[in-house]
Image (cartoon, one colour):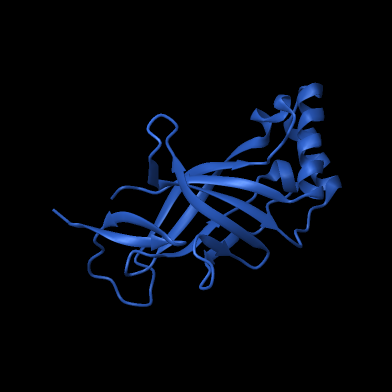
Length: 177
């Protein structure tokens, strides 16, 4: 049985299995998994529509530390398939991931029943800059994919809000290997 080892992800201590037979300087493991992307909205009617399932690639180094976190923003917000957002741990700020056009402040999610943080269940508040979002492409995408006029109106409202203030909350769970 492999002994778990303590690793650091954006300043958070996590327990993952010992990684064996890897070459230093190369990614030892890439975890693929699902999570959610949430656009913060104040209107209670929009909350569920502002939550999107997304896929993550989490690349761990030979020591089990995070090297990269990658994901794509939902098409409902961008109108097109943008290249993946790539975030890496900041050397200066613990708990922070940075990328070319994004900065994420991350932490473990606290279980509301127990009050204990789960180190494998992570949430990050992300701010973006210089995203190239074409409102016409967003509208065309939503017109093609959303049939209900009221849902279309709400999704357009969320997309406009995201374009004006490109922020979001990503949440993902690491595997307990």
